[in-house]
Image 1 (tube, rainbow, N blue to C red):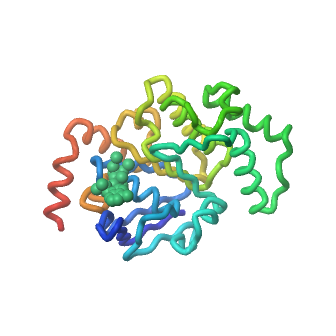
Image 2 (cartoon, rainbow, N blue to C red):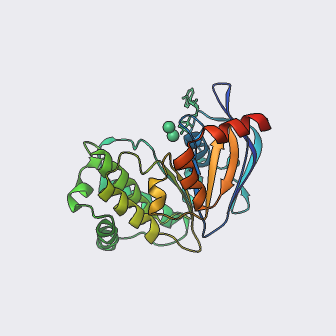
Length: 252
Ligand code: ADP
Ligand code: MG
Ligand code: MG
């Protein structure tokens, strides 16, 4: 589904990613870990097509296509979803309005009929229940005045409604208390499917107690410095990131 080869990315001429390789197959859940500032958000943003990043080398293939040639809008329509580390507030735009517009844009792109108000509401209420969210949040401006936990849950609600092929979750766990973490993890787990891949960016292994990844990767020195199974996350929890960075530094 996703094949990243030798990816180099700079921000304002400063190299951040320096030769990153990653392969994600349909049905898999991958966790990207790494110290603060190692480029985890950069990777997620580049895949979603956000502005401000310059790809200086390498290639990214998504479902067999050159992802880097696609506009951010087209990436979203082709099933890539990014849940932000810092969800944006959109004053004056009701949450339900944004969700409905996004769902119907996707359906139009796929040649499916738009959902009418009744069908859409049924869909959203189903997902709200899954996320343990209050219906009232639908009618408030997107993320405006939401608590940290409500914003994160709202990101997962968007994902649940949009049913992406490739979901990128950037530190969706940070700022969540344990109950909210379990609900978010439950929402993510409910979305695991053979047709969908998920890449979870996380700084701590806590989330991985509830979402068991197929592979864990550590970002250091601008590339994937180490990959392993879920046990790698536990080792990182115990030993920190220093030893991985030291080894990556020696390697080049
Ligand atoms: P992580 O998500 O792993 O904490 P980021 O991808 O956010 O790391 O950041 C990687 C590096 O890029 C950091 O050194 C950070 O300071 C730098 N960086 C991120 N955004 C910008 C920006 N807009 N301008 C300059 N440097 C940036
Ligand atoms: Mg960070
Ligand atoms: Mg980040």
